[in-house]
Image 1 (cartoon, helix red, strand yellow):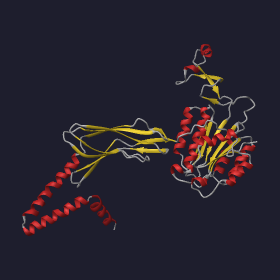
Image 2 (spheres, rainbow, N blue to C red):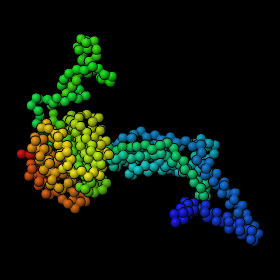
Image 3 (cartoon, helix red, strand yellow):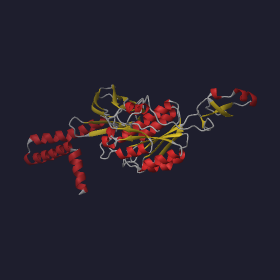
Image 4 (cartoon, rainbow, N blue to C red):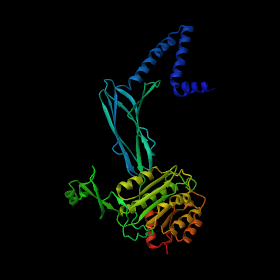
Length: 420
């Protein structure tokens, strides 16, 4: 049965034209032998000579071609434009007809297909572009060129280059007035935590290492010891912010750009950006198929690492937000503010959040209303539990504008419940 299916695919679906012309050839041969009539004889000669010519035509059409692809960016953000420039050159002395050039990709909305004809020593260059609609890791390429004979009997495909990954970051909304409860600073007045960034708090010196900036050299010690010495710095006295993103597949609803997963990722990126722009230390935790922890740091490079993690995040985990908070609670001290982002309607995780709050950790929650994302449950009960536990809470619906929603925290709006 499998052999019959394979034969059907080969002769009918993939080479129907060649199957028909082969059948006509044998009919003409048998008719010529049986009747001696001149017409089937000449048709058989035409087929016998024409089919090999068509085969070599199709094969020669893919020779002496060169392809150059220019992709200037492989890291982009949602809403930006991905573009590439493709150049196909005919290095031979014969015209290349009906070249179907395609640069395949799994990026949503991208189509890089072009049909061209090249004369001798001629080249053709064109630009293709697409809007980056959805975050994630995509591949593009390699370039394929398909061609065939004028009758469609044969087709040949050649591949040029290799596949290239393209990472699309989530787009972060600029939040002008976002508020979460501030954490208590340690009594010493500063954190005893080293950092590779230059801050006003110098804490010591060490030997110079290749790559250290010259503005970190401590010249008095260098002159006294005769060796290059650089200054060590500590973090400024400001609390750490930890963003915890719920990636439990059982609580997220909706698909694609309209789903709760995309909304939660966008909120996490926006909150991280808000605090990092303010030069605050931000940590990030999520648990999809595996646990991901980005320790609290500051700076543009740290923000890029968080964006990379968010770009690859998928709601495919089976760890509840309650279990995640309990497992990582040891990371949070009295100088920490924890922000939890989840569409979960379970009240159990509220108890976990309240537990770390009793230890002196400042807590806040961003609760996505699942019923507005296509779910059947609503967040009324868990919203009430958060209010009863005195947890500062933002409620986000599918159609909400994030700037307006998160500005309500400063205004004491109904969607944000401030701590007393």
